[in-house]
Image (cartoon, rainbow, N blue to C red):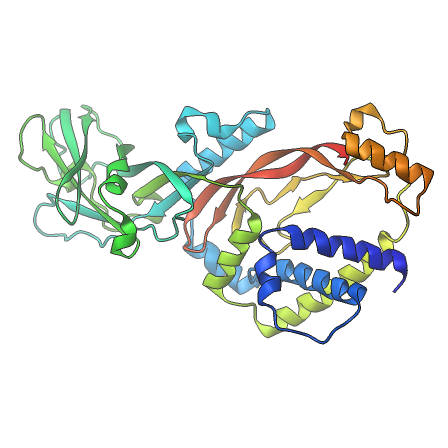
Length: 404
């Protein structure tokens, strides 16, 4: 192994080691015979690259099975389209009033049982598995979205103003009440109910991550509960896209890493089959070999932003990332030689380091061409609990490059 390649691999190893998500794996790794620093760096870098390629399992059968189970709700798709379009215009979607200042929006599909066919349906229970909500995120709001479709086999109730009640399944204590207007010509629509009170009244973690709420409707000021089927809330034989969803708005207390989501997906779905591992091991080895040959020569151009097209399908991530399937990430490449250009916005330290390098290249390395400004992108994906999640990931696109 020549010295240039060894130095490049050493730099890659130390960069990966500085990432918080990579340190635990290194700490918990089993001891190995002592090797040269260059050899250890090469193997560690290869192992990290292999981890990203092998997680999560992306066989065709598994991908088809997952996509047949999880169907993105129209509301989540509309959130992604709206907020990603705003980002392309340079707007931060988390500042929108509709986002409640959240950078993560998670949808949980109702898992309650179908209501009985016989007898009037006065109350209906909605059950949600919210165990994937992280304690490291601040909960900012929640809403219950209910699809109402007037039945064709019975007369609808009289038009007018009704009251929709949401209460806890455990204590029957009221959580929220909101007006429900029934028009003279009823049609299918989505009703949105504030469900933030369900989280304020008690932690779902104490119930095994299960959140249960009761729905009832009364006419005007009366306490008499109406038949929910006649109002169009019956859910028997309802397609998945019309099932009730609980939408929870949260904000991460620190910058999120895609590596964390990959790790959770791996825990939930297990390792790839041995045959798939072998294929990826060979593919990763070939990629590493080509990478070393391609970057063995010193770059001649000055530091600037270069194209970098990321395709999630090629990474094997299209089985859990819904959108986008690809995007332009860009990267920084080139030399930082003296004198540094002003548009590169070098720090004083970078200026001094570059000057020292120009005087004596053997004593001081040149400053590095790195991203100085990055922007976020919106990602719609399936989490480890098979819930559809919208998340705004920071630092995903290079906007400017500079010498540091």
